[in-house]
Length: 168
Image (cartoon, rainbow, N blue to C red):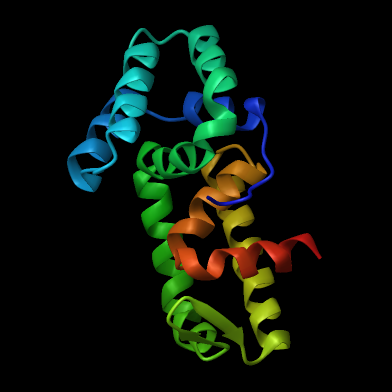
């Protein structure tokens, strides 16, 4: 589980800004093929709630499920804004991936930051790019949307270290 600080308004705003949340949820189930039945039930339940297009129903659903399903909401947000996430991630990966990968070492489940100054610098630059691209796209400039993209760009194992950098 990722410890992203967010709130109901940020999450609701991300899905209200999506062109077709229902299609995003279907695509998630089709492409990710979650093996955990509780995730499948959650996504189908979410799809049933948002299919009517009511902002109040969406907000109520998020309010009820945010604490237990933050990770799923983050993944679903990426599917709700696929073009934005793909183009932003592509830009970042092309510019920073090789340099960033040299800043840390992975040994099994253990991550060791080898060059903390460079690691923090790249994380800061990447976060600024995401914020700038969110602004340009007219999407909500929120912690939730930022981290939905950052979780796509950075491997899950390293994201805890990315969060630490962004908090300091």
